[in-house]
Image (cartoon, rainbow, N blue to C red):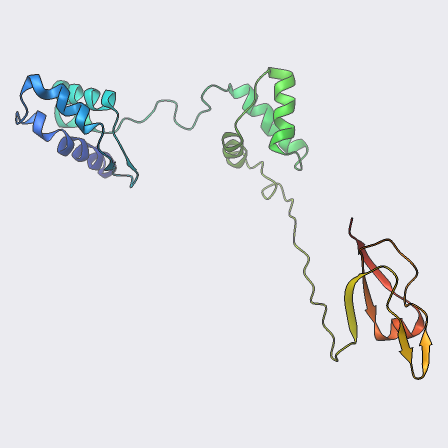
Length: 208
């Protein structure tokens, strides 16, 4: 029994102590366990929850049969293996991801539904893809965010805004026509001082 298992065994032993050491009458054991099952407790893993009545009964029976060692936390024999989903399905999902790294869990599950009439929960699928080195990052697919500061040395060297018909610009004493051609409503653009005076405008994107 390792340190982690010993911690769980001590937890259950302390919890069932009144029954184990005869402080609770045998006829009152069931009533005691039912009351205990209603009480929120902090478990060794830090989670706060109420122990189920069936778990309490099982732990008590195991103590009576095996002693203190019977209270250690049992490791599932299928730990780390997909439960309810065959290895063939997981292997196919991994192949699909490696074949096309941009495939989402939804796209993979649509294929699995068509072929195997089943799907894999998103968290389970990701866990197996990660273990197989079949995530976007591990397959060398990255999506870097592009950031740029639209700054200039002087005020009004650069204007950023949404427009439809403007703006009008005055060059010395002459009023120039709109710095851009008519466009659809809410079109984003950039104006720079040289561009405005020369009648050029850079359109960066359209917002629909």
